Length: 260
Image (cartoon, rainbow, N blue to C red):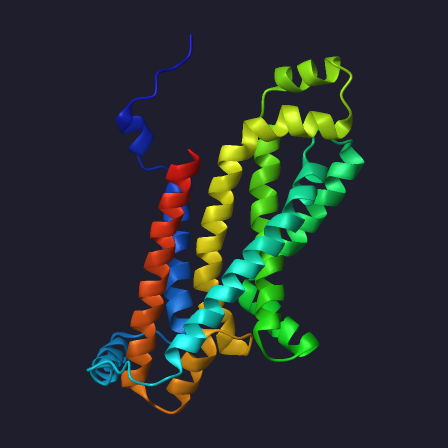
């Protein structure tokens, strides 16, 4: 007969748990000391932060650099989502273990893992060094990131589909592409639209980030304003970025509702 574990037994302290808790406390103290964290430093930081934020008001929207930067960020997000999705579809099909042999699927998984291994800003830095400053580097960086995200989720969605529909299509003598069109796509199309909508929204946010390292978009304008200590203009840019991301969120919900 198995012993019944009560709540008191589950939360009862044991030597092993006490050692784990003690180890966590020691590591937290060590990490805080190594990083130079202290209450005095936090208090000074709060004062500096208050003076820094005071320079944000009133926000300045009058400079002409905002609109071109926002439009460029929007273009980077749209193109990278489009190119990334087009590349992610074959990668996801190759990665699906229920459609491909193990050797082939692992090669697709390696591509997805590579694309997901680095933050878009890191890829943007490499792209800027490779092809130069500008929006092209941002499109390349976010395209690679989109392949990793959409490819992974789409591959997992394909692996979760019902095998009965695939077997029924194969029983008709359909080719591999026929199986994909009539057996796979109908089962994953709604989730795929959701993946693309979410990634487009993410690219809209990331397109403002990659500009900081010279990959185009409003991020470059924001970084220049910081270098000039033009904090009221920084506030205007930040508010515009927030508004752009909110518009992207609304469009994402609309797209999901239309294709549901």
